[in-house]
Structure formats: C-alpha cells, structure tokens
Image (cartoon, rainbow, N blue to C red; front, side, top):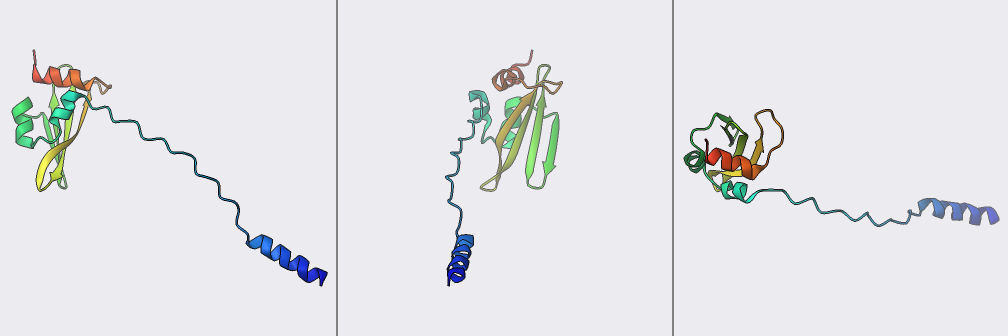
Length: 116
C-alpha cells in the first residue's frame, strides 16, 4: 500500500507543471527618427518627388516597389515607394554621405533642395 501511495505521488509530481514566470516587460521600440523635412516627403508620388528634387540619379524597380535615388555633393537620398491604394507613394527615406556614412536627414534634404 505504501508503494502504491509513493508511486502515485511520484506520478502526480511528474505531471505537475512548473510555475509560470511572468514574462519580462517589453520595452517599446525606440521612436523612428524622421526629420520634419523627411516627413514632408512621405506620401509623395514618383512625379511629385521628381518635381521636388529633379531627375533621380538612380531608379530601381523591384516587384511592385520603386527606389529613387537623388545625389548631391554632400549626400545621397534614397526614397522607397510602395503601392498605397494602387498608387506608388514614398513610405521611407534614407540619407547618407557619398562615402556611405550616416548624415543628418534634414541637412541632406535641404542640400538637395538648394544645390549650390
């Protein structure tokens, strides 16, 4: 009888689940740093973007998306356009120096808007 009680106790203990620990609190992702100048470009169509900066130095189509690149002496701007309600619109803007280093988006956009 003792063996039966011992065996059933061990069997029940083996079936028990471990106490659940609360998941660690998740931090909110850092806010995306989009300059007010870059925010003004979001939602533009390809024609509006070309009207704003002139002819792109590079145009790449991939599936249903489009990347337009505008270059100046101080920086390079890549505008990524994806379909929204059937129309290609700027959804993301990336800027860098011609050497590929990070640069201030606002300064780059201003430099491309006002080439000297």
